[in-house]
Image (cartoon, rainbow over all chains, first blue to last red):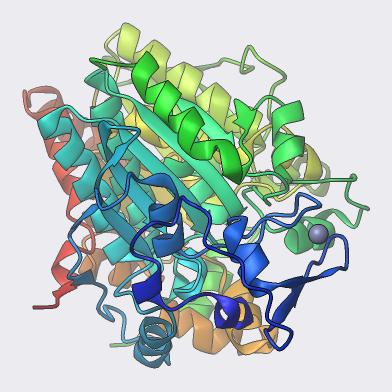
Length: 283
Length: 265
Ligand SMILES: [Zn+2]
């Protein structure tokens, strides 16, 4: 995962992500090329702007960075941190791939769950990790999501979730597919209890995650430019042999077609989530 | 153990000569009345549904339909539903709930259609909504996988109290060709992928994903449909009498994969 190389090590991200870090212009420091405006941006500048380019392009962000950005300082309490997937089908190469993902991301699995305060309001929070097999959903991800909704139901807490996923994890076969049912059933129980669930869809959110808990929130937000869809664009192109419409499967495309509530630029997400939590007090 | 290899099962499951959803509907039930449309956009011919009699019991039946003739297969999009198909199915499920009818689904699809219109009209959202609503539907639901069980597009009609599978049906998170091309950049490794994905009925039974594997002896013959009808009737009687139906459905799906996890100290 090349984009991880410029991200700060985990231990520097735990605290104070929301306030801009001091920017020290270092002539030798690494730069990142923005795929949108083609400008090179010093990494320290990018970090200070929550990995958003001046042109508005949102770079991918790892889960710990997001938690640091959105949660009140020091308020995040991780849950189910030790849960990780096995290799139920003895799928060729899966244990090695999972180990590589653990090493690269520093995480046990492709989602991090916990509780946090956002502008002083307590909420359950899940954040998917793009550095772990592109956030694919196997049994561990499904289990952690389901447990979090059950935990939130027991304590009558809202759930805020950041999604990023290539879909179901094919190395766990049918058991991965079943996680779509498992998570949806857990979301439904939480929903039927009158509790709030807000999803923030980030780039990319596709496949079995889109077709389950990502799309099941009461309020659906998406980061600008994020790819959100069920089928991959390449598969759609191959299946239909047609040129894809401009902006196909972007957040803006979904907004236009009525499938999300708002585009939420990263810089304003904390304030927006805080206000939404205040609007749903008691729910 | 003899029998087809996993990839042979994939080919058998896709065989054009297999009975399709409508064959089951017309032969297992009596007096099928088809209900069309999702009341939102259109009527998806890849999903058929309506009401019928199972003996003296009114039931709602829903099936993906591939069609038999070339023309019909094309009209039905080879059994690959658009969002409207899932929304029609959900409408009929909610109707079944209102009138206290059990729901029986027959699933045979390579998957939800991967098209531009399907994406524009929320394929993912449609499947997600079905999964949520099916998880608490207050009437018994039985789904029978009769051919291809293609990923989320099949699951959207199979979050059920009982899931049964024909012995040569397959059920998979991804097609073996898709898996091979993603993992090994080589679609010709589909045979290896089919074996690795554990997608046969026997595998699904072993994983607990299906309760019953149905013999294909007499497939498509009157005795086959009669036998299936009897099984469905008996199972529905048991399910209808169960006050814990919804809780057990939740537990059924909640358990998948949990015992495969490792908790790191
Ligand atoms: Zn830029």
